[in-house]
Each structure stands twice: as C-alpha cells, then as structure tokens.
Image 1 (cartoon, rainbow, N blue to C red):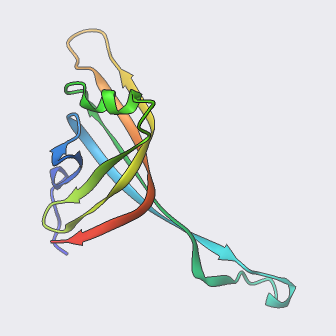
Image 2 (cartoon, rainbow, N blue to C red):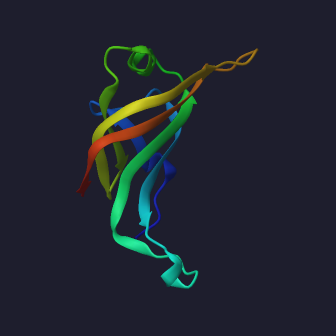
Length: 129
C-alpha cells in the first residue's frame, strides 16, 4: 500500500469530521481464549476462535463547535454512530460509546483543546474503497 498523508485518517459522525481533530487513531482488539493446560508442556495454546473482538478509537485536537461536547455529555444516548475513515483505503463504521472526553486550555493565544476515546459496541463494518 502506498504511503498516505496523516490528514487522510479521520473520525467522523454524520459525514462530518470530528471537532477539529489533529490526531486520530484506531486499535483493533482481538482477545484470544487461552486453553493452555499441563499437557501443553508449558507452551501457550489458544482456541482457534476469537474470545472478544472490539475496536477503540481516539482523537485529539482543537475544539471546534459544540457537537462532540454535546454528544459526550448526553446521558440518555450512550451509543452513537461514528466512522473511522482512511481516504483511498476504506472505513470502519458502527456504534461507539465515548468513554472519555477531556477539554483543556492554556493561557495566552491558544485554542481550546480536547481529547476523546471511543469503544465499539456490536459489529463494526469495514467498507473498502
């Protein structure tokens, strides 16, 4: 695969990139089922089935409007639809819960910053370009 510019990777909701993000990342978690016992001579053995499959996303940047803040503070709607997009490659889409949302600021002529973490809930769909 050809190298891509970092700006080609982003988290979005409703087709709009999130809140002035400067960094976006995704982690694919594949928990295995350990079935090692005394008969395995001390060599770890996994069941050939996934125990838990989940995904995590994080982003941080400059707060741009209140959309993400409004979603994060909504105590009645825990899950929202977000997409992790890699332009020219594809996207992961599904239901995600915001697990952490932090707002920060510095003295002087600096913009308000934010960071957010998301955890998948249910199936996440991969759509290749």
